[in-house]
Length: 441
Ligand code: ADP
Ligand code: ASP
Ligand code: MG
Image: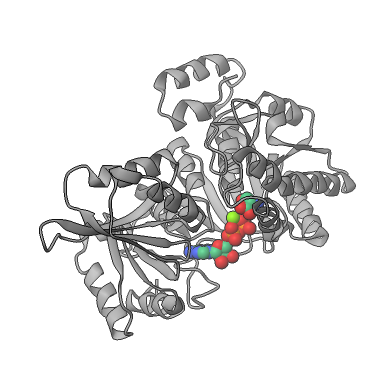
């Protein structure tokens, strides 16, 4: 069965058409292919950190079930488990083999899905665990950051029709050659959104250890304010710039598939933050939030020849090795012959990036290679920036007043990012939060 997901994620209108035809009988009662009584609930690591937390989650599920909704649940590993598994898997090779690495690091979600199904059964709620390969949730073969290509929803639908609550192990996928894949750190958010899209759920609730999406990380900026709503676009920038409350891909998918997404607390029964279309927010903030990311590794190639094709010789092989490059700065060639090129990659791509650069041989000559892993990227984000000048000026002035040096700058239509020394993270976040008046709302 072809799910709505594969039709839209890659923009194949024909596939979507085919899906609509396949489902026109079974879904003829459902307006716009949304099952008004189906909700996907996803619980993150801290929400299932121990047996007591898992009992609490079972209680939240029971409450939601009492309101008459059908539920599909997705779970992360217990807090800290995936980190331990990563450490184990990294113990054998500097760059571990993808399929085996994924086999190890995906194991935490198997445990939680089973435990939560048991906790639900203990409350008299019929439930069963599902691993990704059993559904299956199909992905490409990009181990450690696989993309979902298709979800066959038929077994989950049968499980629901049986009156059971399916508890799906998030983060996991199945590659075309039958191996376990993982969706990138924080990937169970994406599992949940993909399930919501495939099943036509009316809402996808991401339950976590904070009450919603805040103007900045509430664990660092105590003045941060919970947002009632945030646009998909802003949330996408916030997530990709480090606000790990949602995995970037989950937001991308929710936006493409029009999944109604809510971030809310596992521990308090309160409304959270809704991620919505821009036209649902009347008054647009110039700056809605400030994000930070410590996951930055800076690489500088000194004395690179200044001629056509050099950038392609650097970034082509990196792309081929599946290394995402973020910020790029090229200085002007003062002597007309050579230049310096600086770029950043995620820390877990750092070793691979160096290997690619160092093995480029004759095609890429450079004088020296400098690296720095002690930097943090701070970003201010807001759709209102499109129509307001002066946001960058305020950022640079605020940082200058605190004596913080800016190493690299990058901008887009709705964000400005700077790379600064890691030790100034808290100072910069708090100063910018005040400068943009975010506590006042
Ligand atoms: P989970 O284990 O539930 O997936 P995560 O740790 O992945 O939870 O995400 C929740 C965390 O995201 C919060 O504890 C918070 O510290 C962090 N965070 C960062 N930026 C923000 C933000 N702008 N709003 C809310 N939380 C944020
Ligand atoms: N357990 C995985 C991780 O820690 C996936 C997730 O939590 O979403 O990255
Ligand atoms: Mg998470």
